[in-house]
Amino acid sequence: MSRTSEYKYQNDVELAEGTRLYEMALMSNYGYDIINGGKELEMNNKTAPFGAEEIITLFSREIPKVDTKLSLANPTKAKGAFYGVKYEAVLQTTDDSDPTFEQDEAVVVNINVRHPKSSNWTADKVDIAVRRALSTLYYVHDASSSGTGTIMNRFSDLMRGQELPVDDVTHAG
Image (cartoon, rainbow, N blue to C red; front, side):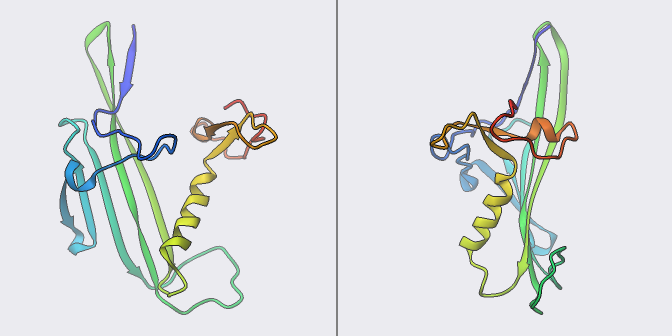
């Protein structure tokens, strides 16, 4: 019995080699619908078959304030911006020895950003914050003194409820 699990979309070309980012081609590979009074754009991947869809929702809205656990000495009174992306896809599993076996499982990933609506916030400042947040999910394994090594993710630990960071140098993943 050999089971295979895979996403069924066809647009999985890396944006640049080694980046692990994908060229999504949102305008050509996705059908879209404007929903929630124009506050959300929902895109359905046209390269994925029915029953194994990939849906991406981009959203943006104003919020009364930005809630945080940080102690701010001089907090702004500005309203906030709240925006992000919701990614949904189907992982489809089949069995080589049983052609009747097929299992579909959903994955949902949310990336949300909140900050005051202030001219202090630029796309570059938000990009740094998002990259730092995403960087907490990865580490360099077997790093040499020059800092090079293999980039590993922390998902195996997190999906098992192991939230504490591991020793980035010695962790085997």
